Length: 132
Image (cartoon, rainbow, N blue to C red; front, side, top):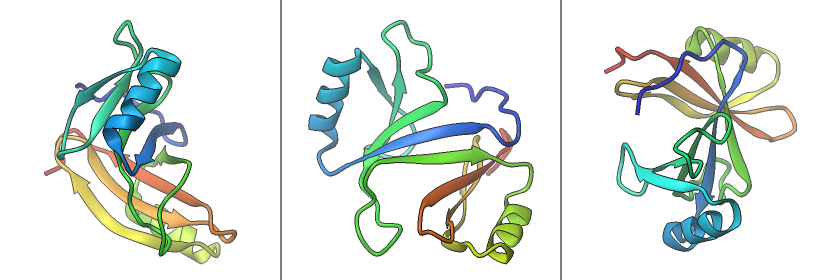
């Protein structure tokens, strides 16, 4: 999948965290006629509409992860940023905290997860097709 150009500040990605990826996949296929294609690590699927287009921002279905000392429930959202390290610095100065240090997804970019002062989880992705 080619990563589209995403303006900084745009809600660019959502992920559905699932305990049972197959059952959750069947639910979204039935409810919204979404299709899923493997991409990246095992158990990571990209979401597409029936016609192959994106359902908004880039979507994923993945195994549930723990970012706050317990299972992540609800949709996990990521915002496009120009510089993930600068975002890390300004977010923590504004009362947020880092939940997941910088991780590089080859061919996609650099990702961190933060908690806002109220404990809400948000990802920050610096898209970079040359990331390794």
